[in-house]
Length: 134
Image 1: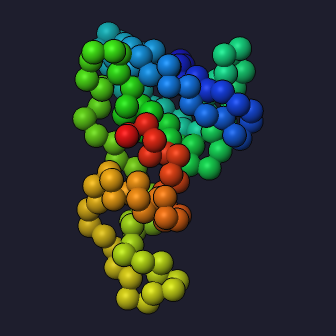
Image 2: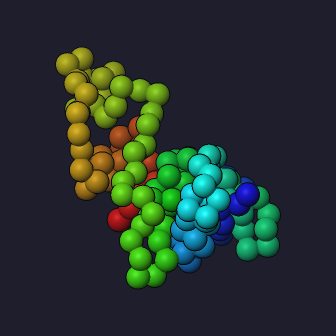
């Protein structure tokens, strides 16, 4: 039951190999369309070229979500129309609430805004998790 998220690098520091996207997309389609199953995917885990289990490090679960969202065979649209990353906090804030007492939740952000916030230190998102969505 592997979707085929292939990585390079060692334990806790692996990077997703972009060339695995078509395989991931084919496997997702197979689960849903051919088998009529709903895949429940654990994030953070992949495998290297030799089949050894690897972990992705900080932001790995979010990275897995964006990889699934970006995965598509060449010439085809991605399997998912959007990626939603759910967190155990109220959402992105207008500022760090520990430093700015009047910080408020931001109701909606574009991909570009989320990537910029992550790049400049928003701890709710890790910049690497945004890469597949670019």
